[in-house]
Image (cartoon, rainbow, N blue to C red; front, side):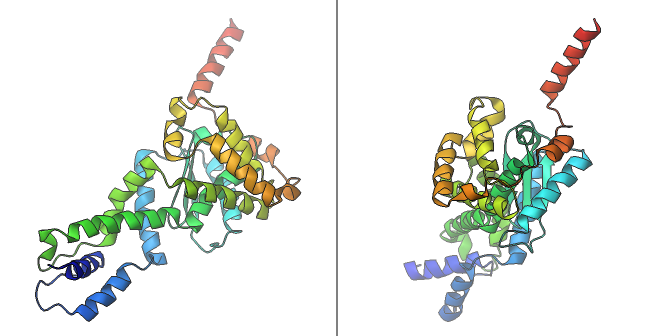
Length: 295
């Protein structure tokens, strides 16, 4: 098979259509290639997002505190309404994990761990973190990376003898589940993370919050031992807090974000709802202190 025929065969495979070794219509194949490299439409994005979200929820379940979940969803939806994709069916959840991290999946799924939530001090910080994750969805960072990985996988298969057989029907979406597991363990490109930081503070400001909330969270994370077990996944999938602080501070200064710095932080409401949660380690410490007082 010559190079051009191989490339066309690859395009055929990417579109999930049967590949006939004989009587190939090169015109139709060329059109198929053009279709295969198009961005995913919203229906495909929704399907990919469901699969990616299922992968994340398969590893860690949401917390059972309904009031906290409802609160985070209200804040998340409000921030998302100020993005360029307010029409997505946005869903937010707090995961039952002491790890310090947050995730997003295509189609409007956003997750934050209990461990990260309890490191925050007010609603502006929560809005900043959710704005960061919302920005990943709006900018299609995960979607584009998952599609790229799936298509590269199929491109490699197209070069094999098996892909030349009649009736092969592999589809791009069939490869996304495996790509999801890899992506969420290695993380996005650093530039994507820096972009999400910059867009996240803008969304928080648009929603009426102090835009320095996200910067405050990053400063808190900088004070946490990077070798601690709670920070392992975050450090493996994101630039260091120090690098993010430097990049975000410069961006906010050039964007004159200080003029929005007097917007509300929402500390009272945040503490009233979120601070009902305690880390298991802290709960044990509190119990020990109670026992000492009784003695």
